[in-house]
Image (cartoon, rainbow, N blue to C red):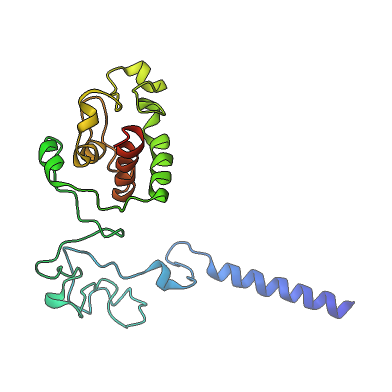
Length: 209
């Protein structure tokens, strides 16, 4: 028992000394676990330090360069960002190009945009779910402009009648994306593919075209 007690006391003493050695204060900055996690190399997109000795007095980097060195030696001109391939255009994860039409260019969108999503029963099911989620509050479940929010704000389009019946798919997609009148833009909330699914549902089910 005496030996076990002595070993326990020794263990506590060692632990106390170890913790005390890690404590920071005054000129003593203490010890750091995994220092690379705290002193990672900050690659700046527009500025860089090419002198590898800058900050060597502070550095504990594994590559033995100065703490402040942040130039990318593998890219042209030491840039930290790569220039896109000439003539290329960025696409999102769904393969869609950036939407270039401005809010006021609804007629151009109506004339030039076509629905890239193939019309299937599954797409219509998704379109219905998305319409109920994003649109029915104002337009109502049947698209007649009688949603709970629509009753309050007024002026909500009845998608089942009048000139709205003959609206091109591109027009509907553009209005969902950029908004029009009392309707706000939903481009930041609904992905392009989902917007086109809603368009299919509006044209095929609500307007029965």
